[in-house]
Image (cartoon, rainbow over all chains, first blue to last red; front, side):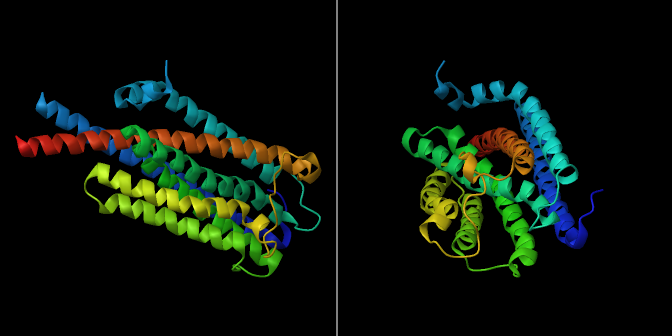
Length: 48
Length: 242
């Protein structure tokens, strides 16, 4: 871990919030993608 | 083969299916390498101390916040002129990604501004135009949600995108238009004289590549979902009419 000196809180919180937002949008994208894909497969199976 | 081939949803789905895992992998690798390099293996700046490490997130996210809107603008124009559904859906898919990057840029800017400028926020031309861009993103997303008919929603959001482009351009060039405010000019330039030192520049380039790849991967993945959601919508309409 590098020595962040007096600005450790600022630097670490900038990284923590940014990475959380990035992980959040990736997860939301993947989860919705999976849900919609399943829904469509279900509908198409029902239609035959 | 023409670029317009991929405006066909089936062709787009077939083409992007094998491409997407490669893009995810490249995005993760570039982001991982760039951020680890910047955070662990670069020195502090002689004036800004360790806060310079925020640079590796702030600059790429701000760049992508504007570029995402530019991509939405191109896709919206294609929709308005050629009526290709995939382009309208790609614009819709890009908005939540763009708003995320804008939020990251605003947050990291505020948190960097406090120790460097002595304030979290200033009604400076660049900061203000960026905040307005953020509000345009929210309005754009809300408008897509508010209109039931997909084609009408695409028309209205495309017009909103054209209007919002003024603020996307302003947020990029505000510092040049009004030579006032706290925010400095462009951090990165192709002119070596004006650029940041190499020790900060190289990891930033890798991180920018990571953000670009992540954006492309997210937009493609979300466009695929929007295409499927539109198909579900069409099937439900057909069931209701039957």
